[in-house]
Length: 235
Image (cartoon, rainbow, N blue to C red):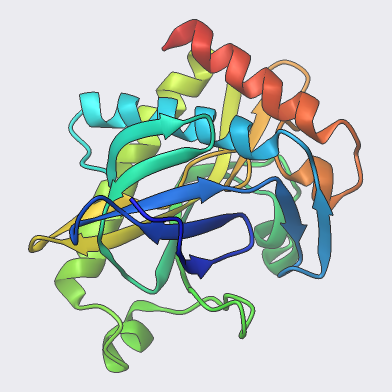
Protein backbone atom coordinates (compact mmCIF):
# COMPACT_ATOMS: atom_id res chain seq x y z
CA UNK A 1 0.00 0.00 0.00
CA UNK A 2 1.09 3.55 -0.64
CA UNK A 3 0.81 6.58 1.58
CA UNK A 4 0.00 8.96 -1.29
CA UNK A 5 -3.10 10.94 -0.34
CA UNK A 6 -5.89 10.74 -2.92
CA UNK A 7 -8.36 12.90 -1.00
CA UNK A 8 -8.41 14.77 2.30
CA UNK A 9 -11.61 15.73 4.09
CA UNK A 10 -12.33 17.47 7.37
CA UNK A 11 -11.92 14.38 9.56
CA UNK A 12 -10.28 11.73 7.36
CA UNK A 13 -7.93 11.29 4.45
CA UNK A 14 -7.90 8.56 1.86
CA UNK A 15 -4.98 6.73 0.26
CA UNK A 16 -4.63 4.00 -2.34
CA UNK A 17 -5.28 0.47 -1.11
CA UNK A 18 -3.61 -2.84 -1.79
CA UNK A 19 -5.23 -3.09 -5.24
CA UNK A 20 -7.51 -1.18 -7.61
CA UNK A 21 -10.60 -2.32 -5.70
CA UNK A 22 -9.64 -0.97 -2.26
CA UNK A 23 -8.71 2.19 -0.41
CA UNK A 24 -7.18 3.04 2.96
CA UNK A 25 -9.00 5.52 5.19
CA UNK A 26 -7.07 7.30 7.94
CA UNK A 27 -8.98 9.05 10.74
CA UNK A 28 -7.67 12.46 11.78
CA UNK A 29 -7.76 14.19 15.17
CA UNK A 30 -9.40 17.27 13.66
CA UNK A 31 -12.77 18.37 15.05
CA UNK A 32 -14.85 20.70 12.87
CA UNK A 33 -18.27 22.29 13.02
CA UNK A 34 -20.38 24.74 11.03
CA UNK A 35 -18.94 23.57 7.70
CA UNK A 36 -15.37 23.94 8.93
CA UNK A 37 -15.73 27.45 10.39
CA UNK A 38 -14.93 26.04 13.84
CA UNK A 39 -11.89 23.79 13.95
CA UNK A 40 -9.62 22.27 16.59
CA UNK A 41 -7.16 19.42 16.95
CA UNK A 42 -8.20 16.97 19.68
CA UNK A 43 -5.48 14.42 20.34
CA UNK A 44 -6.90 10.90 20.23
CA UNK A 45 -10.18 11.79 18.53
CA UNK A 46 -9.29 9.86 15.36
CA UNK A 47 -8.56 6.71 17.32
CA UNK A 48 -11.84 6.96 19.21
CA UNK A 49 -13.94 7.55 16.08
CA UNK A 50 -12.21 4.68 14.29
CA UNK A 51 -12.79 2.29 17.19
CA UNK A 52 -16.46 3.26 17.56
CA UNK A 53 -17.20 3.11 13.84
CA UNK A 54 -15.42 -0.22 13.43
CA UNK A 55 -17.47 -1.76 16.25
CA UNK A 56 -20.68 -0.48 14.70
CA UNK A 57 -19.81 -1.61 11.18
CA UNK A 58 -18.90 -5.11 12.36
CA UNK A 59 -22.22 -5.24 14.25
CA UNK A 60 -24.12 -4.16 11.14
CA UNK A 61 -22.30 -6.69 8.94
CA UNK A 62 -23.33 -9.45 11.36
CA UNK A 63 -26.92 -8.27 10.95
CA UNK A 64 -27.03 -8.29 7.16
CA UNK A 65 -25.90 -4.77 6.22
CA UNK A 66 -23.05 -4.70 3.71
CA UNK A 67 -20.46 -2.03 4.47
CA UNK A 68 -17.25 -0.89 2.84
CA UNK A 69 -15.11 -2.23 5.72
CA UNK A 70 -12.66 -4.97 4.71
CA UNK A 71 -10.40 -5.00 7.74
CA UNK A 72 -8.83 -2.83 10.44
CA UNK A 73 -5.18 -1.93 9.78
CA UNK A 74 -4.34 -0.09 13.00
CA UNK A 75 -5.89 2.25 15.57
CA UNK A 76 -6.68 4.96 13.02
CA UNK A 77 -6.63 3.20 9.63
CA UNK A 78 -8.96 0.80 7.83
CA UNK A 79 -8.93 -0.98 4.47
CA UNK A 80 -12.21 -0.48 2.60
CA UNK A 81 -13.88 -1.39 -0.67
CA UNK A 82 -13.42 1.27 -3.34
CA UNK A 83 -16.97 2.46 -3.92
CA UNK A 84 -18.35 5.36 -5.94
CA UNK A 85 -19.86 7.59 -3.27
CA UNK A 86 -23.40 8.77 -3.98
CA UNK A 87 -23.27 12.52 -3.45
CA UNK A 88 -26.24 12.52 -1.09
CA UNK A 89 -26.19 12.20 2.69
CA UNK A 90 -29.09 10.40 4.33
CA UNK A 91 -30.13 11.83 7.70
CA UNK A 92 -32.34 9.73 9.98
CA UNK A 93 -34.05 11.41 12.92
CA UNK A 94 -35.78 9.77 15.89
CA UNK A 95 -35.95 12.82 18.17
CA UNK A 96 -36.11 16.53 17.35
CA UNK A 97 -32.74 18.22 17.75
CA UNK A 98 -30.37 20.64 16.05
CA UNK A 99 -31.45 22.03 12.69
CA UNK A 100 -34.73 20.08 12.76
CA UNK A 101 -35.83 21.91 15.91
CA UNK A 102 -34.74 25.29 14.52
CA UNK A 103 -36.41 24.84 11.13
CA UNK A 104 -39.72 23.43 12.31
CA UNK A 105 -40.14 24.95 15.76
CA UNK A 106 -40.18 21.60 17.55
CA UNK A 107 -38.65 21.63 21.02
CA UNK A 108 -35.34 19.80 21.17
CA UNK A 109 -35.78 16.41 22.80
CA UNK A 110 -39.31 15.88 21.45
CA UNK A 111 -39.74 12.26 20.38
CA UNK A 112 -40.91 12.00 16.77
CA UNK A 113 -43.93 9.83 16.01
CA UNK A 114 -41.94 8.01 13.36
CA UNK A 115 -38.33 8.03 12.16
CA UNK A 116 -37.86 10.74 9.52
CA UNK A 117 -35.50 10.64 6.57
CA UNK A 118 -33.91 13.69 4.97
CA UNK A 119 -31.50 13.98 2.06
CA UNK A 120 -28.76 16.58 1.88
CA UNK A 121 -26.44 17.34 -1.00
CA UNK A 122 -22.92 16.23 -0.18
CA UNK A 123 -21.17 19.55 -0.85
CA UNK A 124 -18.98 21.43 1.62
CA UNK A 125 -18.87 24.35 -0.81
CA UNK A 126 -22.66 24.74 -0.70
CA UNK A 127 -23.01 23.88 2.99
CA UNK A 128 -24.62 20.45 2.48
CA UNK A 129 -28.10 21.87 1.72
CA UNK A 130 -31.25 19.78 2.06
CA UNK A 131 -32.42 18.37 -1.27
CA UNK A 132 -35.53 16.39 -2.16
CA UNK A 133 -35.89 13.24 -4.23
CA UNK A 134 -37.23 15.12 -7.25
CA UNK A 135 -34.18 17.40 -7.29
CA UNK A 136 -31.82 14.44 -6.87
CA UNK A 137 -33.24 12.51 -9.81
CA UNK A 138 -33.64 15.65 -11.96
CA UNK A 139 -29.92 16.43 -11.89
CA UNK A 140 -28.85 12.79 -12.12
CA UNK A 141 -27.24 12.34 -8.70
CA UNK A 142 -29.11 9.12 -8.03
CA UNK A 143 -32.04 7.18 -9.46
CA UNK A 144 -35.42 6.64 -7.83
CA UNK A 145 -34.55 3.01 -7.17
CA UNK A 146 -31.26 4.01 -5.53
CA UNK A 147 -33.01 6.52 -3.27
CA UNK A 148 -35.57 3.91 -2.31
CA UNK A 149 -32.79 1.46 -1.48
CA UNK A 150 -30.85 4.00 0.57
CA UNK A 151 -34.01 4.85 2.51
CA UNK A 152 -34.82 1.18 3.04
CA UNK A 153 -31.34 0.37 4.33
CA UNK A 154 -31.28 3.51 6.48
CA UNK A 155 -34.45 2.52 8.31
CA UNK A 156 -33.12 -0.98 8.94
CA UNK A 157 -29.83 0.47 10.21
CA UNK A 158 -31.79 2.84 12.45
CA UNK A 159 -33.70 -0.06 14.00
CA UNK A 160 -30.54 -2.09 14.53
CA UNK A 161 -28.52 0.78 16.00
CA UNK A 162 -31.34 2.10 18.19
CA UNK A 163 -31.52 -1.34 19.79
CA UNK A 164 -27.76 -1.56 20.18
CA UNK A 165 -27.41 1.88 21.73
CA UNK A 166 -30.33 1.45 24.11
CA UNK A 167 -28.55 -1.59 25.55
CA UNK A 168 -25.64 0.76 26.22
CA UNK A 169 -27.88 3.31 27.94
CA UNK A 170 -27.72 5.69 24.99
CA UNK A 171 -30.53 7.20 22.91
CA UNK A 172 -29.86 7.48 19.17
CA UNK A 173 -31.30 10.92 18.47
CA UNK A 174 -30.28 11.26 14.82
CA UNK A 175 -27.45 10.27 12.51
CA UNK A 176 -26.01 10.67 9.01
CA UNK A 177 -25.23 7.91 6.52
CA UNK A 178 -23.41 7.76 3.21
CA UNK A 179 -23.70 5.06 0.58
CA UNK A 180 -21.57 4.04 -2.38
CA UNK A 181 -21.98 2.04 -5.58
CA UNK A 182 -19.94 -1.14 -5.50
CA UNK A 183 -20.16 -4.03 -7.95
CA UNK A 184 -23.68 -3.08 -9.00
CA UNK A 185 -25.13 -2.57 -5.52
CA UNK A 186 -25.31 0.08 -2.81
CA UNK A 187 -23.21 -0.43 0.31
CA UNK A 188 -22.77 1.60 3.49
CA UNK A 189 -19.66 3.82 3.45
CA UNK A 190 -17.94 6.57 5.47
CA UNK A 191 -18.30 6.25 9.28
CA UNK A 192 -20.84 6.05 12.09
CA UNK A 193 -19.42 7.76 15.16
CA UNK A 194 -20.15 10.60 17.60
CA UNK A 195 -19.08 12.90 14.75
CA UNK A 196 -22.04 11.77 12.64
CA UNK A 197 -24.64 10.93 15.32
CA UNK A 198 -26.41 12.64 18.17
CA UNK A 199 -26.12 10.35 21.18
CA UNK A 200 -27.71 11.20 24.54
CA UNK A 201 -27.52 9.36 27.84
CA UNK A 202 -30.94 7.77 28.28
CA UNK A 203 -31.23 8.84 31.90
CA UNK A 204 -29.69 12.29 32.07
CA UNK A 205 -29.88 13.31 28.38
CA UNK A 206 -26.22 14.28 28.64
CA UNK A 207 -24.82 14.76 25.14
CA UNK A 208 -22.07 12.29 24.26
CA UNK A 209 -21.44 13.45 20.69
CA UNK A 210 -20.03 16.30 18.58
CA UNK A 211 -22.55 18.74 20.04
CA UNK A 212 -20.12 18.95 22.95
CA UNK A 213 -17.75 20.61 20.49
CA UNK A 214 -20.36 22.55 18.49
CA UNK A 215 -21.93 24.06 21.60
CA UNK A 216 -18.77 24.51 23.69
CA UNK A 217 -20.01 22.08 26.35
CA UNK A 218 -16.48 20.89 27.08
CA UNK A 219 -15.01 17.42 27.71
CA UNK A 220 -15.48 16.40 24.07
CA UNK A 221 -13.20 13.38 24.17
CA UNK A 222 -14.67 12.24 27.49
CA UNK A 223 -18.04 11.92 25.76
CA UNK A 224 -16.53 9.91 22.91
CA UNK A 225 -14.66 7.66 25.35
CA UNK A 226 -17.89 6.98 27.22
CA UNK A 227 -19.62 5.95 23.99
CA UNK A 228 -16.79 3.54 23.18
CA UNK A 229 -16.73 2.13 26.70
CA UNK A 230 -20.46 1.44 26.67
CA UNK A 231 -20.46 -0.06 23.17
CA UNK A 232 -17.58 -2.37 24.07
CA UNK A 233 -19.64 -3.61 27.01
CA UNK A 234 -22.57 -4.67 24.80
CA UNK A 235 -20.90 -5.71 21.53
